[in-house]
Length: 224
Image (cartoon, rainbow, N blue to C red; front, top):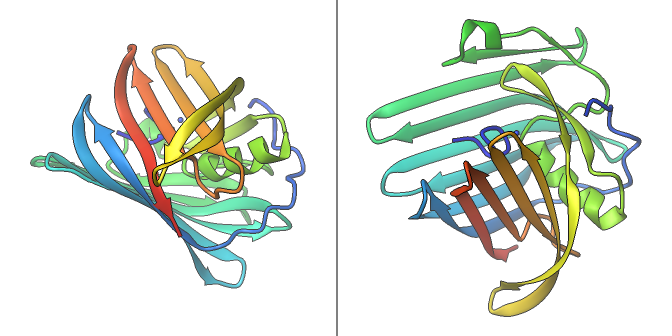
């Protein structure tokens, strides 16, 4: 299960990004996976020094452990993925995938538990994001009123990602109601819905559906 990948996840290159300086945070989520199994989840952004950052999502439940992490660089408010890790363990089944984004060569490659036709190389374009960075991009661009259109290079393929704004909705965070902007994208049998609250660096909620059924639901509890 991958956030914005299975879900997780533009034919257009990302337009010049509005200024949105990255700042470290740790966000705690209440999670539901595999149609109702409760889990704890944490989303974090930490500095690696200079203009490099690690953005990670960890989900721990009785039946599954998931981790997605992206190392990226920030340049004038725009982000470039440099490497990524995607690991999961469902009971006795394990999976580990690694991504490398070589901007000098202008290509991305994947290794680990990936199919031969998903190893790359895939040609990179300025503005390309991976699946994880879409979370940050949505928060940034919803707040700035920017078009929610992206080119995602992830898991050996390029996909156009376009989100539609569905209006406002009230969400509860730490016992307090907050107004959120609700956005969504649908492709074939998959749907991703994201709630963004002004002033928060992470989505207030991410709901991933497949065949009309909830696959992953992350609800923000706190952020610091």
